[in-house]
Length: 224
Length: 166
Figure (cartoon, rainbow over the protein chains, first blue to last red):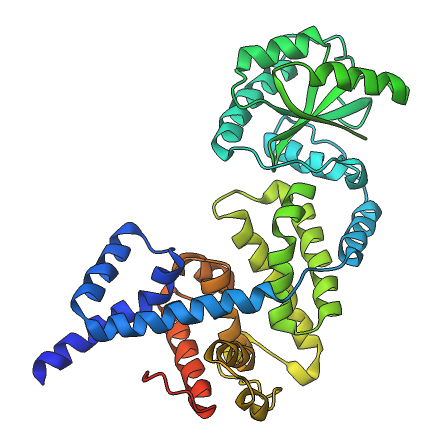
């Protein structure tokens, strides 16, 4: 009896972890503790089967809830379009530039992009932040550099190939007279200025097609 | 923004819908959630997963909406205590299998219990992430989940399905 009393708090502690064990969200250490307890305690194992049952039915229930209609996204875009534009920060700050990027995009013109490898994006983000910093501090000057206002000019959205190095991207930008205006955002996209003024759609389409053929580019779309 | 929306809007919508239980309200709320995400993108520090951040915003919006609806008031103190009796137990009796009975009982849990079960099982959030989203200590997260499951078993028992637990 006293042994049961001693065992109860431990069982309760393990039992409280069972839902997360079923969902696979426990730390490795806790998962191992649970596995060991399940192996030596048949009653706990029986209760775990109940948890698995709840887990499956909760997913089933949620999956039958459907998805929002197009009305939700339309309402979102109307609200975003109604937001006042933000001016760029006076000082260089990657965080504020990302915020600026979100502010300056017209969502309707953005192409949907597939997800890219997160690690590659993070590594590339570091490299490109360095490139942006060099641009800002006069490390090199692109032909399209006369303006630093991220809202002026003609732009594309580019995701660089994960294997592209900092040198590859720098050469690509210089060769094509491009400059990075903002980014990266989710999906590893950068807003890249292709001209300091507005250019005809045909001309922009020709430029985009040419850039798309470069191995440094994994995704490109026009934006405003 | 489109990438974030494409990746997360369905799950955020379902999370909100399970709380407010009105499709039109849930759609309005996810527009508000993603507008906040758009506004605050520059402030997001990446300390937690983007989905955790969005679910936190979504939860706040859903609770605010519920507070505006006097018939379904909800706050953090009462979230874990309110039971929902919107569904007639007789309906559950008519269900043919244990799975559908379980799903029926999942809809009859209180908003606080529905929320935590969804976050753990469907949204696959860890103890730490649930604590962040709901704004309660990790120990409370475990306890609340335990009692949500216990309540689920009790509801099943009322329908004649005894799971032998608790």
